Length: 627
Image (tube, rainbow, N blue to C red):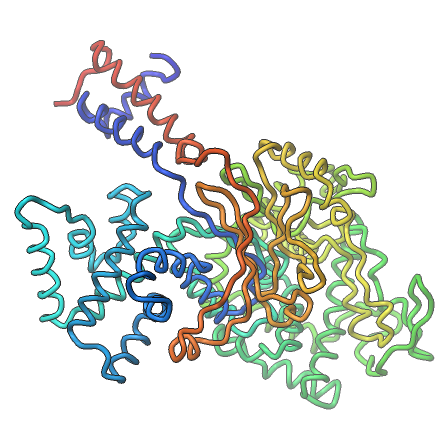
């Protein structure tokens, strides 16, 4: 029976019980292999920017406007094309506005539905009818299927049927709901798969709302960023991660989101800050959080000398007689004298009130059901890296040495490097999330900021930035990976390490904002590596000069889109002000790529081979058909 044993084929025969069923599925799968590959979009470093990111999801990084122009620009002009796009992006709001303005009579509704049907038809051409049906909102699947798959006939029966459907939709006042369903289908067909290359949390104001939107996406994966790891660690029970989350949220004025969305109160922290620091204003609470953080981090470093982070044990470097700190570069004055909670003979010891505060917040993070729901999604949809259709995706870096080889990092008495280090990090995150034991939780903190963490890639200078005014001490040394990301040979070495073809493969990386305003390109290593952190986060847009990147990978090639700033939903509705994007074609394939060329295609080919064996077994009589 070839490559498949009888037991396997017997199991397969349960689903395909006779020769006709096996033949039908082989024919179906072979036809699917001939379809063009679906479009993949890659974005990274979302950092809680709900408005801009969800608009990019709604306009499919400009793809919707491109398709609408192609279909209708000659007929209705640019202004009406943009108006139609606004309806697709925000259907309920736009329909309400049109109705208020008296611009939504039955004739307008008919024309909108017909145009949306034409757009659905265009976008569905690269998929099977079965796949398109699965993407349809369930409540409207029958009507959508009928509208979408009509064929012209000699007597115009289908056209008559379609007109009757339209009249029924209008007369039953179901047009608004149908339009919403059609716009949802359009977005699902325009982008087959969305890759989030890390960092959903921190800095921006609405990560929770953004996660609600991402959880609605039908085909999404996440490559964890260091900020995602930090929040996973906090929700799993790492005290150091919890207090880092609180510090970052407070510093970016997002602390109320934690209370509003996750039910974690700020009152215990305020009371502690009042008692020991005399105030509960933002600056004072940040000071309290920083010192608590220094203690918690120091305790982890002392528990794990193998982390190689003894140089970050900063509290024992402080001279409390003159309030200075001794760094490798010299002695520097501290910018405040409020260190009463630090015991001089045991600087990392926790006061009883601090232990109680830590326990309270660790419990609050662990027991927040809304936080658990979001973190479960990030965990289940995520991984340290992903190999997908010849491309390697990861957020941070592959730690390297100064000679361009993979850094060897020791954890638990075992040396890891390259792919094995990434796999180890993946296992640790899963262990920390599932079990929450102290060692795994400590490692979660290390992965957030450790010297040789593949999520971090730099030495964090949190202490210097918090308590020293001399900015020369703030610079954070980076891993040597970043010295080599322009080196095509190194990029090829990394692709080979992960079992990918160095000729056709690419590395897709986030984490480091691209200084586009200063002429830096997101394309590295002669097109082998892409850095797609373009500054969705407003805090970085002065550095990047743009407002985010989308890398588009489709059957024709790769292009990168640089987005300009988002003016808000109101501007879209009032003035059809879309996010404008500048597209650059990075690579055009010599021949179009089909599903046969993808990872999914490889699975389908194996399935065809197995079905072929089953078919031969039916025809030879080795396995009887189930009639």
